[in-house]
Structures are given as structure tokens and as C-alpha cells.
Image: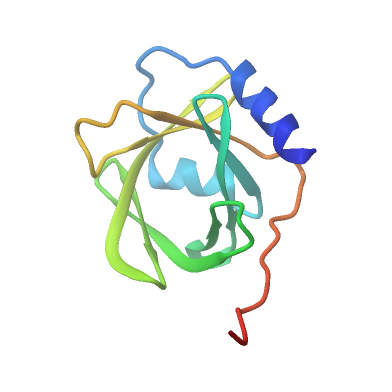
Length: 131
């Protein structure tokens, strides 16, 4: 049910024309202590918990979570997660409907990700055990 509501919310968000990317300080002030749910093309995509000291937990909403951290590199906000050492870099812009994140690792990527703090918890299941 929550994912249907998220998909509807994402579909209703407005994107803004060519806003300036947020600075690391602006991004940190906006996300600190929040859990943001991200969508793409009207569908739920994933969620991230933003903790103290730029620590994060990401999930594709499948119950599996990856811990990591973020840092800035120029206008980019880059993330390193426990399961991969290559940075995933994004630019973030504010819009009337929340954040818009653009993936910078692939210059051909035109997909925008919209974010909202929907007041929900991110569910992380325990490690897989057994066969």
C-alpha cells in the first residue's frame, strides 16, 4: 500500500527547470535525520536513511540494505556503499515537490529521481541465513 502511495506521489511531483545544484552544506542540512524515498518515472525506486557524520543506509525497497557514507566532490554528492568501492555521484536540486537527483556517473542518463520524506521507516531485513 505504501508503495502505491509513493508511486502516486512521485507521479504528481513537479520538476523545475535547470535549478542550481545544492552545495554539500545545503544537501546535509536538508537530509540530516530524514529517510527519503526516491522514485523514477512514477515508480518507487529506493530509499535512503541519512544519519550523523554523513552516514547512510540505502535500499531498493527489497528488504536488503547497504550502509555507506557520502562526501562532496565539486558540485557532486558521491556515495560509497559497503558492497562496492566505486563512488555513485549525483547532483541534487530542490524543487517544489522535494529533491531531484541526477546521476552523474552516466552522462547519457536523463532519468531524474525525485525524493520525498514521507515519514515512513525503511525496512531492513536481517542477513540471509540457511540455504
